[in-house]
Length: 216
Image (cartoon, rainbow, N blue to C red; front, side, top):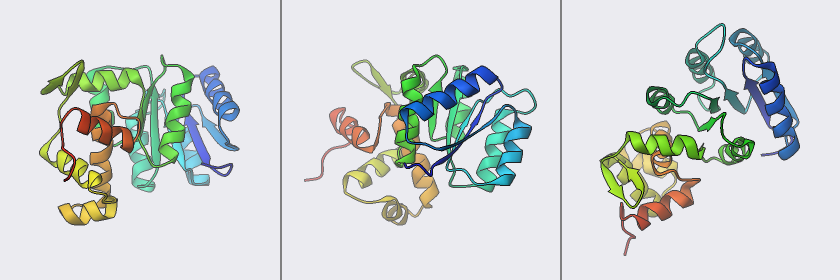
């Protein structure tokens, strides 16, 4: 992350919009923060210049936030996207996961979590605030240990094992005969399920809870 990072904030409440912008400017080294108060303004800005990161509310007055998200993904497949919303319904969280967002921050969370999300995601990681991490773990409740609930698919376990073996995204994609985007999607889902802050934290938890074992 540097002073040239370009961010687009989208929220239909002006005070929230300006408040988020001020929080990011005061806590992070960012000089290019644009704002849009509805979908129309957001699309207009999309047509005017590229952005490194989008922070979106999914409830907008003139469009479905998920429709806007899909437009962004279609035009900018590598875009980093954070959903900042007060909606914590299970079906909403499932839709966000399926949309492969890079981060989820509840509006009821402390603003420090939005700053953490921006920092982690611009460094190539994913971030989910504690509220969303806890709810997501409740969605996937096949494997239980201590107070944590996690359900990982066989493919997700293969991805973790490949990461532990020292493979990067390209190498894992080649090894599993999948695209790099698919591997990144698996990684984001794994981190959401485990409530991991970054890849290192994900690996530690996977070993700690015996989801995988260290190679000999």
